[in-house]
Image 1: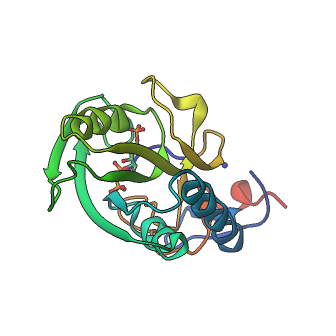
Image 2: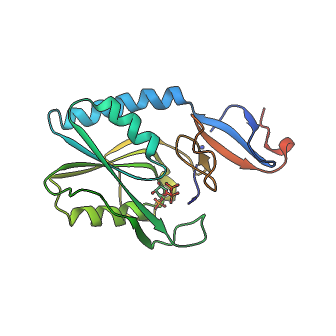
Length: 199
Ligand code: PRP
């Protein structure tokens, strides 16, 4: 599903559909570089522990798989899927579990991997859900943090980039299930081409 996402600069170019334009906010090279740093930060905290990554479908897929390959040491992963009710562009705070974990996390060092932290309502629900399952450690890594949108009192332990309140797509993030495959994190803009072009 799709929520409000966020952004800053560079060139606006046509999107895949009329009236949709994208501009790169964070290049894939910057994402990859930041992932290496995040992996080091996580391994600094857990140098020898087996890490169990939990990806929240679907936006976190590329982030999780790229991060997993940077982490080194023993790494396993699992996925779950949740859905929030509401208009499709805004969270109502109600979260429904669509796909549960495949394996128990009891006693494991769990790293929750999210593509974006927005209102924080999804993460708040997930943290409660995971804590009940008694992991040894529970940490959260997010690629993007849209700080000014926060409603729930939650924070990530490791954050890739703080971003402004704009609609972002790419590197796993979608608009209506499209644009997930873009390599960069980009801002999606709507309107006429002349209005959308910024330089
Ligand atoms: C995104 C993201 C988080 C959630 C964050 O998922 O992956 O799970 O929204 O929003 P919140 O902080 O306001 O709760 P989305 O519902 O867009 O699903 P998707 O990953 O399948 O695109």
